Length: 386
Ligand code: SF4
Ligand code: SF4
Image (cartoon, rainbow, N blue to C red; front, side, top):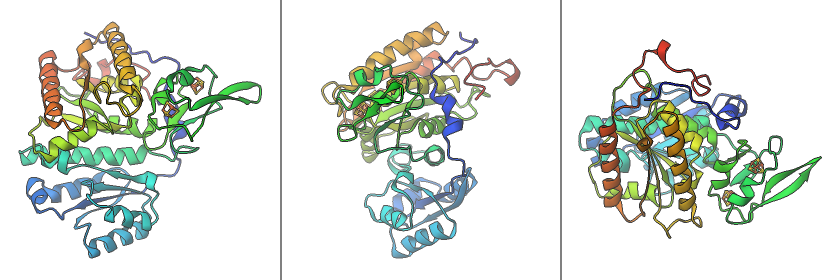
């Protein structure tokens, strides 16, 4: 059992978060759409509205029929009257009407996030309390992602902080699109991303040993905020057990999760899903952070071999996670707390099967040993002292 110190190497995306967060507090709005009659029966919508109002930096939250003309007008007015600069829409709408209203009201496309409370809560948890709790978690995670999001300097895709880049070249080896070259920056050479070639997979960002890379949409800050939300309070208690975090790629495993919802396949409510562009965007530090925050297991899900949208990002993920399992074992964790698996978008049943097996497997291993230890006896670590 591990009760020691987790030492995070010199490179730490976590270290830079305090410095890079926008100084002005974000102003968040949350709109919960009630146009679907069935959704209203499967979730306690009033609870969701009240809960949304209580979240940090939320200036306005309302459950309403977002696709009606009146609803659109209310959204526009709420954004302008409350000076909202980030918006969460739940569930993810099937048409672009709501998004258009939000954009027309002046919110940047970088600052709109969706909480899939339909496919990932109402449709997969038949117990209304479980479904409502999951929906709350999804809304809180989307809000956290928006709180942590910032428009990363530079263009869409990966960007390099030339102030901290050491010129080590790891990103150039990692990129399978030859999108990274070196340029001279004063006396030293630094990496530079050619955005005409960058496909926005994020593999290089996860590989950079000095935390000098970042990307809009899936910035380190945004994902860390989601992890914090999903693991909040776990260290203080062994309940609820288990809490599992699944990192799912936007091309294969995340759509498979939504497809499981569309098919109303019943799922265990003990997991939360964090979307990444490719499984290769999953930074080993995120996994370490998730475990040291008390999560009982971490599952990284990518597309099957030959199906990765990004020239074998899944192979890289497999190698990285295998290595990381060894590292966590050397730190005293059961290496089986990290899982890696593969599922394609058209395989919702397989997604459900993988989740079921992983949850069963974590139940067998038991709670993360760091959980439920009185605060004064908890290990000190770089992570705990952010
Ligand atoms: S991996 Fe990071 S530190 Fe190394 S060259 Fe690329 S951006 Fe610079
Ligand atoms: S995000 Fe992907 S495609 Fe873009 S530079 Fe990095 S590794 Fe290459």
